[in-house]
Image (cartoon, rainbow, N blue to C red; front, top):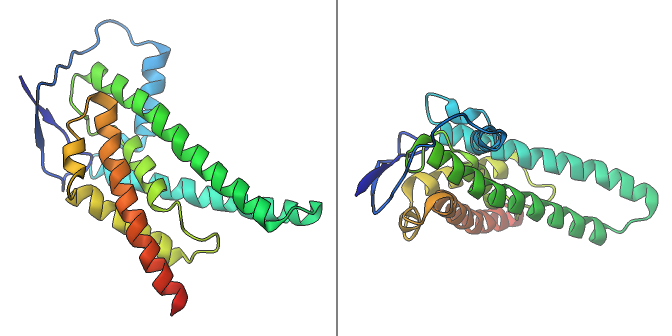
Length: 204
């Protein structure tokens, strides 16, 4: 049995997967179904054009919010004798916790939405783009220029749409795991390249 795997962005071609068995959930939706839809789409998944790009933009907003919170924490730390090393450790731990939470819950939510819609990787699911985008920006310095943030956004979109090896192969994984895995690896690729760009930017 063959099923069409949708893309979160129209620029990304359709992928045909084999062996996928999807069944549309019958009856009334439960609270878990509605929560899964909300978490998987973050609202912007229903955008008629390029929902994946809007999902990445949500990831950037979460990143900027985390940086804003870190700046407020820095002010608090200065008044309570906390060291910068401790604050940086807490910031990194908090950022990793956000990524891990979105990835784990997103995998569950994507799987549930996939089953309820009866479609392989439905385009309304953009939580994978959010997770991937956060990973792409994960290693930026605390005081990184907004231009580096924009570069991270563009790099992630490039890898997410281009899908160099083995990103596209990961799409064939089962259910929510396949939905999330390719964007996570795209985020890793973007993070590596962005780290090189950041180093050059800071040196010159």
